[in-house]
Image 1 (spheres, rainbow, N blue to C red):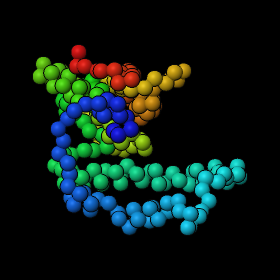
Image 2: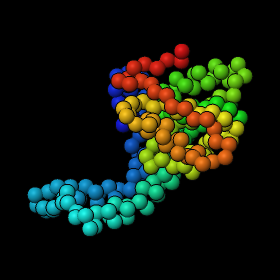
Image 3: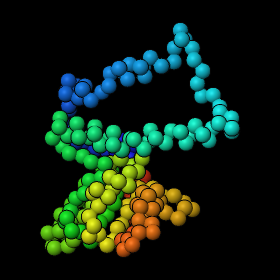
Image 4: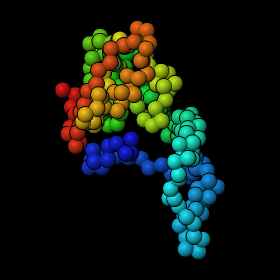
Length: 205
């Protein structure tokens, strides 16, 4: 979650294993990369960018881009699978952790999920049916991939956001999860929570 945990993860010390460039180079479309670089600003090849579109066409062009965003979750999933073959670490767009028949789960993203996993291990060992859905791709938010990870036994969901949307009916991740179950029969109870503003530590306690 490179955009999400900047201060929290940049100010800690960890041992890491650096991937060799030769191993991950195959994941990159080098022709597409070069084409992108060729479009860089260059005084020898001037272009016009950032021009405005008039109201008669802007709406249509914005909607025409939908198909590209709709395709992204499957593309990201494919690259995650390729990366797992290199590293041995498996990631999905939404990872489930906990009791396979959980009745109570948390939905969250970022470094807080490691803390939540500690709590889940403790509670599952005591016989409680709890779990976690860790979000790895937030936008576009894919309902299809969310429900792949979602245990059908769930009765209650707590969604944790690391932001405060003052004046809104809820914070972003909470509203996204709530919308997934809108109008569905036997929908779980969904509540929202907040944590970690300004990198305030969140502990298992």
